[in-house]
Amino acid sequence: MAKARRLFHHKWRWQRVTKLMARDGMTCMICKEALDRHIKDVFSEMYITFDHIIPRSGGGTDHIDNLRLAHQGCNRRRGCDPILPESEAA
Image 1 (cartoon, rainbow, N blue to C red):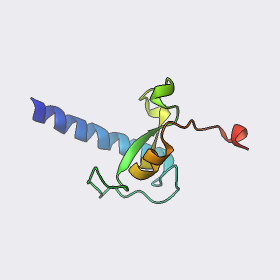
Image 2: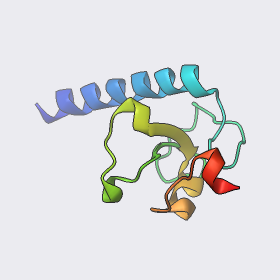
Image 3: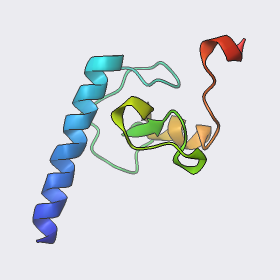
Image 4: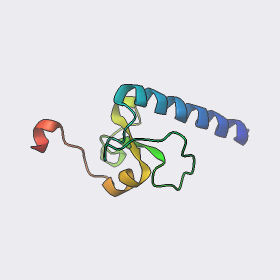
């Protein structure tokens, strides 16, 4: 049972990555460098992660509209900092 659940999660994760790449492009939304789908080492700084636009700690959800792709290292450095809309950032 655990193996089936793990395989389902793996497939679900990469389907979601594909949807987000189609929406946002193949770049890290934090550093704007290219994402590499071939990196499978979950401990790599370049591994693809889901970055929450509104952090979960701030009431954000796991809905695809609240997600964007980022390198693991970039996502970790950003932490729980909120992302301001363009009009508020200036």
